[in-house]
Length: 199
Image (cartoon, rainbow, N blue to C red; front, side, top):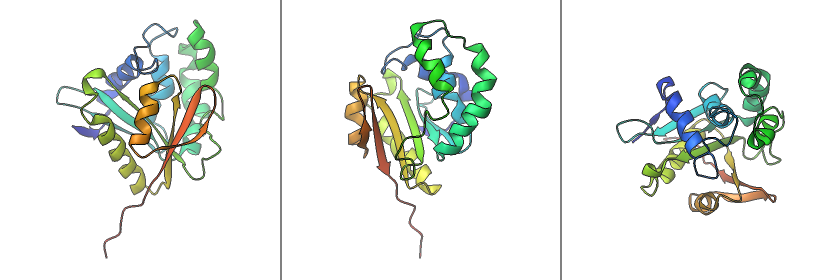
């Protein structure tokens, strides 16, 4: 069920991001166009430094993913220097959603949490309803953490909206602990163990 994403999965990944982008619910119509959310939070990870994407595919296409990067600092630099300038013109602000999303995408410090040295990797996970409640989330998180540990990352973090109650309950169950919070979001992190070396 879990496999590495291919370039042929790009449209499915963008669709999953859109259909889960409003605190786990469908974000269609929230922003000025229905691709901007994926261009900020999903598809760049298919191209950027340290990027990875694993999909949950029951046999007829991806219905969930975990994606991210093993090097948040390098990825953030690439995002603002190369990725966002290449796509920003296709996402002019039109809605209230755009009014915060578009400026945040251009922020060179957006991904640079204070705890970055201990948790230099980060990830995002999204599942369509048909993939939920079947162990897909835990399996994807475990697979991503194993991949990142294999790359030598000492820790991984993610940011979840406080209003997304499902996410707030899920991450502690899969080994993440809150390391920072404000009125809008909670930053969760998990230490990673490098793979054991056979003697």
